[in-house]
Length: 527
Image (cartoon, rainbow, N blue to C red; front, side):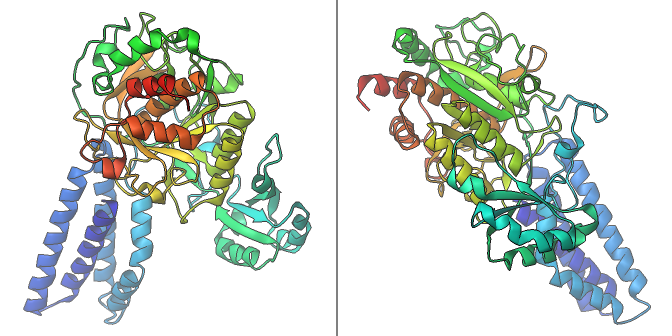
């Protein structure tokens, strides 16, 4: 959808330029004018139908109007030199791919639903929350894979030439193969304008096996719609359960009834790790199921991580808040790792560090409601991190993304060895914003619209997004791992798919999970 929006804007700019330059040529004037008005109408319609907040729509339209006005002023000012405006138009047309990429990358101006920290809060790390003008981390722009650890000395010349700081990127506890050979390249601000030259020179060094950008990712929560379907569950007394419409679609009443009979069947508490903006460990609906790894992870200045943690593992049947997949304290122990800043930003390195830390801490399930459009077909560093986690027994659940596109172009949802989760709405149809998972090896669907859950300071709010869909699956998979700790990713996915409901759009977003059927199959058959 963002591509069409960009094309409408570019068409409006080109036709406006042609209109200004048409002079007395009436035919050209009419054609250019008609094309301009058509493009503007299409642009306005596309902005209107986007699943953005009103503020994001206004900011996007205002920015593009300013750019259009500036472009027209430039063309008019250049008319005194007859050939110059045509050179400007030709240059504009030549750079359409670059401009399209820029517009898609910087649209919309996201207003995050969970952001509760002031911009002047001293606890927010500038290095984590800000990027340079390339969309990369200021603390290290590139990740390179060397043929061996001994190859670092071969980079001495280029390090000295550009004053580069090259350090070991990842520090897994156990030998990891590929991860041990990744290094982070930090380019001084004064040399950033030469980044393309630096990349070319690095590629020409024999011992540099692979290179990718250390991209900055941003939490993205689509604007919520109003109103939810009410329902009643007979097995829990959580006061907000009636607002959890998804419990009817997922037949949670049956699930809770069955799980109540299986409390003695749990082999152990499954360790569920939420990699996000932190988790409010003192929240009334999480305090009983939460276990701290580090105190700095137990504060959530954004709200996103707390919301996701409670969807998966809020204390259920405790007379407070919402109900989740963790009825009683026998099945799930939830832990947060902070990989995103309070402003909702995080780098690829930060996220991979979080995956490694979770895996090294014995995670049964790792849930990541984050990601972004990849600048490359696939980020190999993510694949290496997922393999490390899988090899240590962790099952990785990732949000498919909210860009209405193929998740195969969205990282880390397109990484090997993860279960990517698309979102459904209250009618169990494909959510308007969700990415699709038809080209993902392990793609499944879960509710992601108007999902009420916890926010810091004992608050509750409904949010939408695949961010909310992923922890539904993560919570269920954690219960599965509690009952059968040796389950692997492929086995888990086969169960989810076999028991899932083939909803109308399941070819695009996967089958809708059915928790009761999953647990019934799991305890009724030998896996």
